[in-house]
Image (cartoon, rainbow, N blue to C red):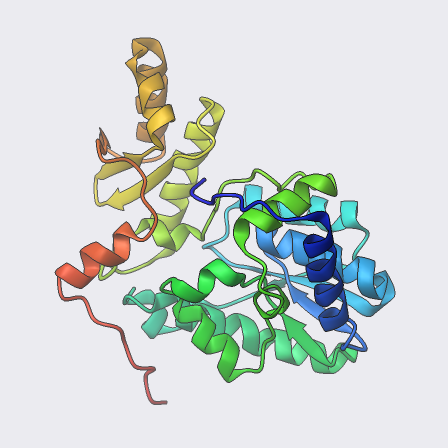
Length: 291
């Protein structure tokens, strides 16, 4: 994890937690866009604490780009928190703007998700929709934030100036199992920008990453390059691959997923690297197709 915890007094933490609760209490009933990640899980817990479960609805979008293990974890987390939870099918794969995999692919994914959430919010009497955007995200490349702003989606954690390190610390204090969970963006993020996204590629990536987790690698990423799987690990996990038996286990699992060649990226995992590569290659953002 790249976040660095910032020392803060108990009084200052109380002020920020009170501010977050006040922001959440503006809603009569709040729909939380819930992925089961660190941020949305903490947000859901805070919303239930502030409003009570009857005034909160967690909704998770399900498509080929969501790994089955992430869907199952989201269901378990919502149940643990005690929040009403709904799974809905999203159809971003049917949008050619999304499938073309431009650098702003996330805009088209989030547009589909938030359009669906607005329909559910209207039907369920929710007067607001919130996502887990936090203070650190404000300085990152996040095309999905444009889709959120266009559709009036609130970001209470950002509004309360709460960063990722604080979310992890508060999650740990509340006993949430996501406190130390690695960031886990959708499976489509494993396909280089400019290469088309399709269900077969996503299934192959999911199966290969399941193999990594079965071998004990919790933070590995499998990048899809045709027949080549490029594995990215944090530095401490790369060192484990000196063990020949473990390396053979990883190679066998990734090949079973459908890749012919298995490579290890010596630079390792670094956030934002995919976008840097796409920018150097001249892969552009994409305007929505006029229909």
